[in-house]
Image 1 (cartoon, rainbow, N blue to C red):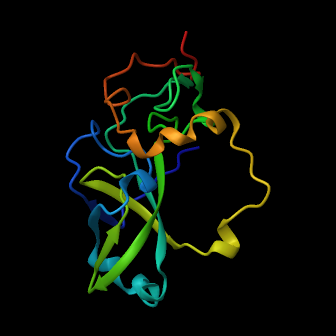
Image 2: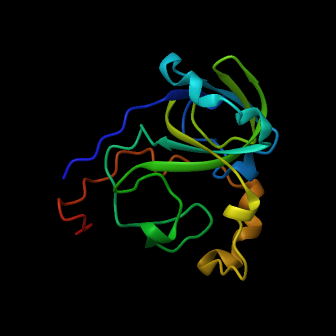
Length: 172
């Protein structure tokens, strides 16, 4: 089965390459950018200005391969790709909750960014705490490392051309 998506816009940020980019939106607090929505999707922005935050779903366009195990930014131990938030994934889809500062025509001005300039945008959803916050949350291996978030930046480890994974997705 083939699944395909087409971008609805493009994200504009000050980050020109992975290295040095914040690894999560909270680590990019105060960083401003914009999202340019393509004209054919502009009508879908109706009423979005009423939300303080939005969820951006985008394509990690710089990722060419993936591995099922990788060292996450805030740990030195290899973890399963589904237990980390790195970009080198079987389906290179990213998700960031950002502050919506204002809307001008087909441009969303946003803040608190961890996205590379030129990233293709796949979808936008309004962030609604009652829908999106969970109770009694466990954070797995990150429990002892979460304090590192604000100082962490991408060091280029995922942008390097990793050895190609086998068709079955294994690393061996």
